[in-house]
Image 1: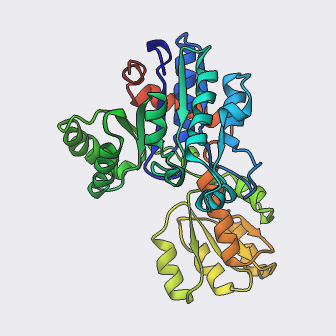
Image 2: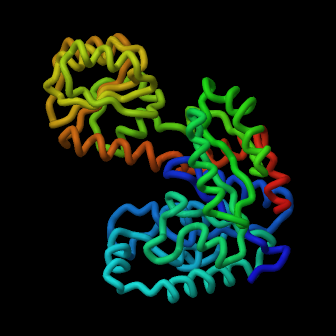
Length: 357
């Protein structure tokens, strides 16, 4: 289906929120700066804001803006992989053969006028199996080579990498480790990369964790949650994870002291939890639920320590789900984040080897 000049690169990932969108767009921009005419495609739209089939994925919209593309959205994203779509597919109302043809036609349209087409996979490697459109299926359909984005925290993560390379077969080209913490970086470079390369698994790069790509600011989180900022000092701090204050004060303090760059989510009437959270150095903000306002003493303590307090009307469970979704999906939102990924790839990855695929 492709020629040498249009052979596509499909960027997939082991799991959601590994920086796949940022890597895909950054690679495309680097290739464009090197003189290539580039295109973008996300065969399965997954980053949706509702469960309605007409909802569009935000990633192709961002790609069209950042890459200056004129392609139609229905070509950039031929399949909207929404919950409604999945239900219809399970009931036999979506024909895999027709979907594959739709993807193939969109691909041919997009690839016709570019030197290199970059495809972004679904939320994770195996997504799409219901309609025989996993990322491996897509790669086979359009004759793409696959670059795998993987996280790394401990040597056990290599099992997932090896399983993924086997599932991709001959389509697999190599992998990039992304968002690697300082504590794991040396072991990955010294032990894991040689281990993988000794098994003919190319590692194109090991990208260190960048706080601005690994989380969201407290201010941005407040905007997304529709929260009221009761204490604004420190709202430029980054949040990467959440801790729920649903235990006693002593247990809460021990728990909070073990966390880092965290937002504590708890009921607005849990003064003892508020106090414990404000004593923990890794807590970046308090998110108080249920529409309750904290005591004046808690507000004063937070202001003194420069820890923002956010107040929301929703209950704790709903707030946790929404907050995690913000952090999970909020890493690639604008040109700034893609530019940061460009710098990381230029400094820590062999992009020339990727473009030689």
